[in-house]
Structure formats: C-alpha cells, structure tokens
Amino acid sequence: MTELDRRRENLFSLMADNSVAVIFSGVSKVATEDELYPFVVNNSFYYLTNISQEHSALIMVKALGVRKCYLFVDEYNELKEKWTGRRLTFEEAEQLSGLQNVYSSDNFDNMLNLSLTRENNQYGYIETLYLDLTPEHKIGDSQSTINFMEEMESKYEGLHVLDVKPLITSLRMVKSQYEIEQLKDAIAATNLGINKLILSLKPGIMEYELADIFEFFGRSHNRSSLAFPTIVAAGKNGTCLHYPTQTSAVKAGDLVLFDLGYKSNGYCADISRTFPVDGVFTGKAKLIYEAVLNCNKAVIEYAHAGLTIADLQAFAKEFLKNECVRLSLLKKEDDIQKVYYHNVSHHLGLDTHDASNREKPLEEGNVITVEPGLYFADLGIGVRIEDDVLIHEKTCEVLSIGIPKEIADIEKLFRTKGN
Image 1 (tube, one colour):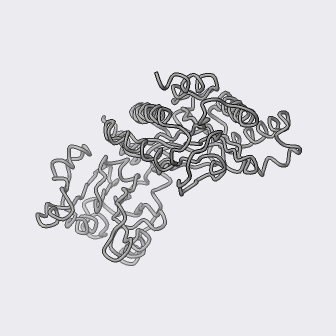
Image 2: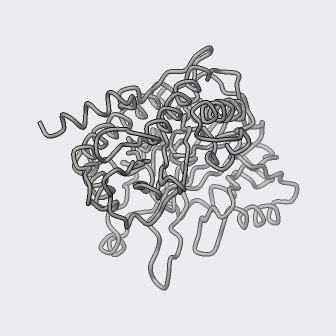
Image 3: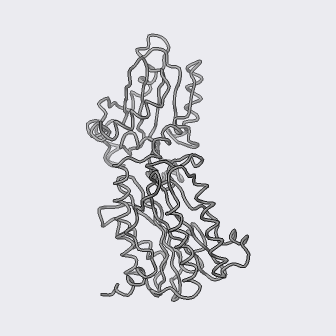
C-alpha cells in the first residue's frame, strides 16, 4: 500500500457500513468586487488525495463489502486556463492521488446520486453520509458544506448525516514516517532561514526587512513556502503574541523574537527563537531568557504519551511561576498570569495549528510544539522558545534539535557571523 492508500483505508475502517463520505477541496472566497483571496485547500481533502486544486471532490463508498473511491476534478478549459493558469489533467490527478477512478467535476452530482438513491442502487441501501462540516467550509459560489448537508437531508429522506472531520482528525494526529520526514525537511529549511536572519540582524534594520529576508530565502531555497505569516517583533513588540505590523526598526539592546517556519510538501515547521541584536544576552533579558529556556527543556523532558496538552500547560505554568519568583522577576506567584498568557503546545502537521482533539491524551506519533514564553511589557522584553517534538511512549524526540537555543551557542553564532 502507498501512503495515500493507507490513509484512505484507515478512514474506511472508521466509517460505518453502508455509508458514503464526501470531502471537498473547497473554493476561493471573495475578497472584494472581482478579487478573490488566494485559494487554500481543505487539508482533510489534501491528506486523502495529495491534490490542492480548488473545486475538486472525493467520494468514498463503503457498502456490501465494497470500498470504492471516486475523484472529481475540473475538465480542461482553454479559456479559463488563459486567465487563471493550468489545471490538472485527469492523468496527472490520477498520478498524484493514486486513484484510478478520476472524473470530471461535471459528473459529481450524478455519481453521488447513484450512490445515495435508494432504488436500484448497486451499493445497496446507504444509511449514512459523512461530510466535512467545518464551519464556513466553502464549496461553491454561495454554498458551504452546511448548505450541502441540508440539501442532502431534504433530497434523501432518512439519510443520516455525520461529520467526517473528527474521523480524519484522529488519523491526522498520528504521523506516519513519511509525514515525519516532511516535517524534518521543513524544520531543516527553517534552520537555514534562521541562519540567514542571524547574518542580517543588526541595529537599524526594519522588522519587515527581516520578514522579507526569511520569505525570499525560502523561495530561493527549494521554493519553500511559508507555513504562516512570519512574526518578527523587536523589543516591546515581542510581548504581543501575534504581532502583525512589523513597522519598527530594531534598536541596539533589543531582543528580537522570531516565530516562523517553512513548509515541505504541505507540512509545516513552527519555530520560535529570540536573539539579542547586539549578539550578547545581558541583565534582566538574560535572566528572562534563561527562565524560558529552562522551562522549554523541562517540558521536553516531561512530555510523553499519555499526558494531555493541558498537563503540559499546567507543568509549564508552574515551572515558569517558580523560576520567575526564584529569579526575582515576579514578587507574587499569582502574577505569572500577567507575563505568561498562552498555551505551551499545539499539534503540528499540514496545518500549523494542526487538526487535533486537545482533550485526548498524547500518543506515539503525535507531533506537537513546546513553546513557553515570558513577556514583560514594562521592560520591553518578550521571549519565546519553540521546538517541534515527536511523542514516544515514555519520552519525546526534538525534531528541531539542530536549531540553536542555548545562550553560549547563540552568542558564538553572532561572534562568528562576519567571518
């Protein structure tokens, strides 16, 4: 079995007997007038097909001991391609997906009707229809999957509609070896981009210039695209978690917080590092950095299968509280709420904040982030250190181990960057 065959078979195993699943790639959303937002594929569809083209759909039928998949993509349209570029041929879609039953999107309605019609149905009596009911999942000009569900329930009396997203999420949470290798490749490319930033970091440079350097390096290095908009936050700006504007100049004495990552075949790296623009950690900035670094390493040592994300958060919060009091950064333990106000972890994969059930205990094959931080707005200091880790039964493996975070290693890089 190929990687994609295994994914589809795993989903079939979770589906009820006498059921059909329909997963759409989605369509672009209108931005304004005749402008559209850039298309972003529904990653549940991409996970099962390896196709990121809009207006595509997958039908999976499980009935009478038969498991069948049908893929639908747009036909070649010469005029449309002159405006919006090439579309996949049926042969290309077949090669990418590993599916032999590839048809024109014009045939989707007929095929679904044949699958769901009660009379003379080759698959018997279909009782359940699975749809991805993610809110605002747009599948047509003025249609969402919620609208589609209502149409199906009205058209096929007695049909039971369920959300397929939790089933796909349970599969996406456990990464295969292929997926782990893609994540490692994304992290390795991100490390190279971070090295480029260290070479460029100096007083006077603008935050947006650093963000542009990282994005351009990715484009020139194996055309690596961004996993998410790069965060570059100097000084006090680093105390805003998703600092958006990037219009400040980096000043001497600043710590600069970077939150960034590239993709590899759709899989996202998510790394945070905080660097001193002068190349040396000093004073309270050094104490704050050490507290966050110690917490980062302690959570990594603590994390393993069986714990929940909430367990990791409680551990990180208690650790940071004790560190801040020990280092006289806080007077009262309760004040930790003022300087640490985000979660320590989330799942990582095709999405930066990957599909997950946060209540479910971690299991082998989960990939998560470990990202404690401290944010002292009155001192103009924000520090976050984020690694990507693979969960094992009793330990976890740091996939981003090659990206420097120790004070001595970072200061050494700054001393040698001009050589």
